[in-house]
Length: 385
Image (cartoon, rainbow, N blue to C red; front, side):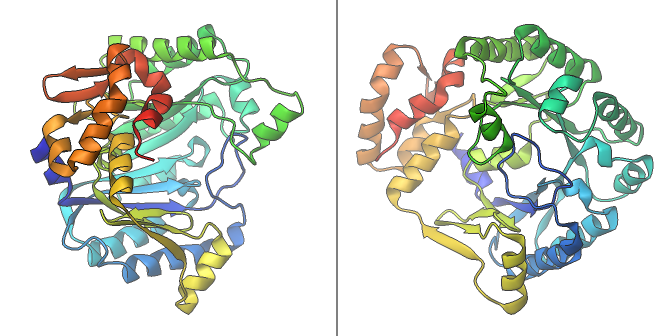
């Protein structure tokens, strides 16, 4: 495990945040804006930041590139290729680099996908969220279930063989039966990867307003737990490995990009609101498209930076490692952190070990399967405050 950990420190990832959406989903609190008139300016600013920060990851090789958002598929394929060409010219890219594009089903015409299949993009992440029309309408998704299925089929026909889909559970009004319907629909189309997230009502979202107005109600915790258990059990029976709280993959199809976050690899975040990590500090870009573009154009500062303390590094390790179903290796932990942190972890973990929430199997330390749904409360007990 320690060898794997060290290997990740010689590999890096690049995340490109495309801060544009045609419409806003009712649950979303990620930074994006709908003013498409400034798209060219945003793309040029992304390109400039890529060039200006080419030494941030040096000398690490870049093993993953991820276009997230926002909605990256609002970019023309030529614009995506333009950004990829800049990366190729300025960064040390491995030959088998995983390059993911998040896509919205209604953006994917046959021509768009045909052009995309000729690009360097080799992994697609579809924002399905649900296969049910009523749930898609509630969430203010632009696509229909039929559009999603058709776009997925087109991608398959054009040779995309590494596809992930996103699903949301815990949706207001959802039941175990409707969630089973979504999962069975996902299993039938056989994506290589499934990310399933429990809905959280975030501050400032339309869902928060709807909740305050009594237009929606959150589902009770027991129903959320039942949906999570069904998720794990049904996908497990269909050969999907549960490798992180929200992520499931067929053999050999885990997300390399996401795994690098959980293994504390370095990554460079490009674009408004994007975060970067070099092992010693974290920085985050301003979450405003016009301000970001203006700062880039005029050579002004566009990010904040925080130097990590030993406490921060320990807390980050605990938060990221225990999200995965592998947890962490005790030898790896001991080599990274002083006795102060080792003793703290042992002391705080004891009650969770007794209750079966934390499992120690040889040198591996991880959360039990039943504890994954309540991982946040367990992890918070382990942090060094």
